[in-house]
Length: 234
Image: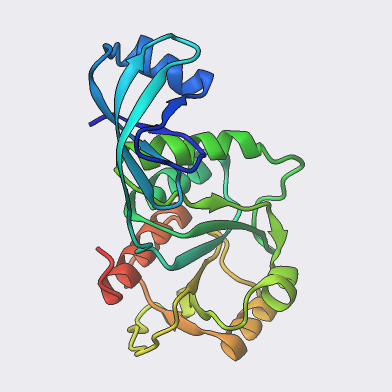
């Protein structure tokens, strides 16, 4: 069933108007007719069953029939050294599909150094991907941050920190942690500096990804999948 994002409180019996972007998708891309059923999502767990009442290309309207709320099943935040644009695109697309709570791009010693950040682009990627894969909680793409600042000042210390490192390729994850949220840290293809490794050893647990050297974007998906399997989130 087609899904559309609407950031609003859903009330049964309410007639709501979609954004121009979602209206265009409904009327021109999907060519939906009045009377067809669809779903509305707010990106925060609420899903509304609705009927198309007006298929105007700029201000479509839907009548909400019933509303349900799903519990959040993603509790892993992924933090990663900023890669090239195509690799970043892969990370946001694929990790949204697998299911993640948020994305934290990091500036590390060996990461790409960026001069600007296209926030709106990554938000669009998340919305499009989350709707396609039927995700009810949309992950947030946060602003890039220096690794040291994030690790020691901004990161919630109550979260378990799990980091991947070439020097710990065969470390099996054996935690019995019951933390509600976890930070998964992935480096650049250039690896971590010795100072960065020392920071992680003091604050986190290493997760090995096997004998093969993986691209940064591949490592993000593999590590995320392993952890979601551990917490029965798949």
